[in-house]
Amino acid sequence: MDLDFPLSSASDDDAGDTPTPPGRAICHAGCGRPSRVCLCPHMPHTPLHTSTTVVVLHHPHALHRNPLSTLPLLARCLANLHLLPGRRLRPSSTQLIPPPSPNPVLLLFPSPAASDLTSWCRSTPPSVRSNPILLLLDGTWKQAKEMHAASLPFISSFAIPVSLPVDSGVDGDSMFESELVVKKEPHKGCLSTMEAVARALRLLEPEGSGAQIEEPMIRVLRAMVAFQSDHLQHRTMKPRVKLRKKKDIKREQEMKRNA
Image (cartoon, rainbow, N blue to C red; front, side):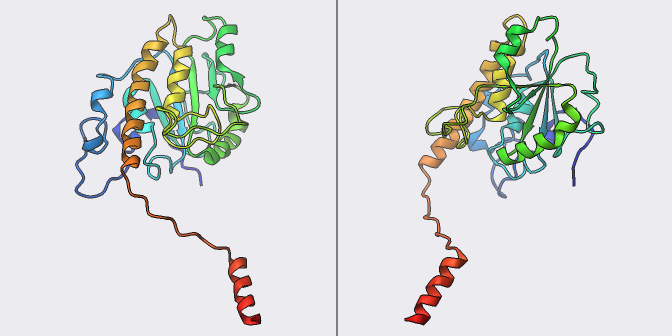
């Protein structure tokens, strides 16, 4: 069942901070993270204002079941951000992007039909691409693909598919190989939602202001990855129990009986 709700501006409730164990000190007044990994010193003093409206359709499980989700931080970094929980976009989901929209609606997703965002910006006159709406899908890669397929019947008639460069033939980096990767990525060039928004805003914001938006967002993400990497380096990992397939167990039992 879809869990679509009316679109509203991002707030602390929208961000849905990841549940933490009882007794752990939390930075409730700021980033919402455990106090020992507080990111407030790295956050913008006030939410960043953009001419681009960012809309994120996020899977209902994206926040509560993913402690590494960058959405809570993204919600605190951008003023013109809207979070929409659900598994697909449809006409009743939002009033922000009713077709036809007077502003370009860009669907940032690495699909075969997507154009390179840099090329689109270069080939589109500033007057035509002013005040764009940037639409993203947030979830696991499997969830995002399902959300993309489910949303296409509605958005394909008006959304412009764009993407940032992704090399599907090369494995992605891990946080130990890049200071911006939150977890192991499936392909080279795959980005977290927060980094994808930062890179896109660098290109979309007018008069060269994109770099001033991108830099503080990347600074927050870099600090988050540093905390997580340091935690894993000092963590004692227990060996995982190797799961055996039922057919292998059955074969062993038959061999014992035959012996």
